[in-house]
Length: 229
Image 1 (cartoon, rainbow, N blue to C red):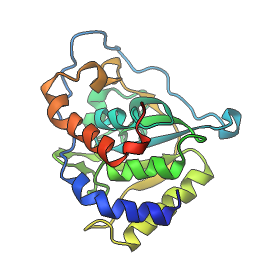
Image 2: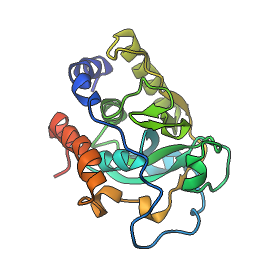
Image 3: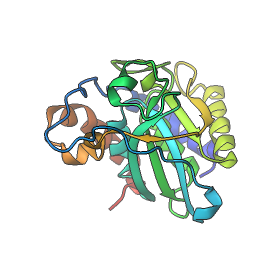
Image 4: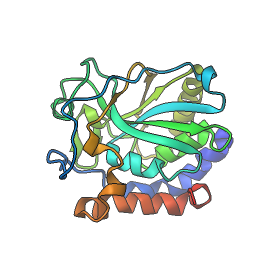
């Protein structure tokens, strides 16, 4: 999809998207079940050329439970894993990241098939399903761990993301400027086990029903033709 067309599409629906509240902060008490005592080894980027049509991008858009649930439903996405990127502390725990001193953002590492979904389309979903104009904040969630971020894995992703951000701001699609940081990917630390596949495993919980489900339903409505079946 051409960026200009994507910008027009985004402008027509962004107001409806922004009313959805961001993820809350009730993540300190994991549900019953297995929980890793420590994070797994960091996952380092492999050269994009080694995977053919398969590519990876790491995105931060507030609570990773919401981001994960949305991108799991995007056609062409092969896997989504919640974790931490962009900081300086090795193998951080969720508690440490929430403390705001590690520099990490809550992110999802998304592996997708470029023959089925373009990077432009991935970014369109990204920017339509969170508020990229609030610095270090999504809704009631405050802190650098909730910042809007694109950690690009190759030069092509960098150029597209920077161009897209500029066009959003030039077109004044949002009431305020987009503050999404665009930085090179360095390292990804998977989050604890209980954070993975959260919405799918805990959909009946109140938090999932009242916070995550509306985001998923809005995504499925706006991107009806791009939803997995």
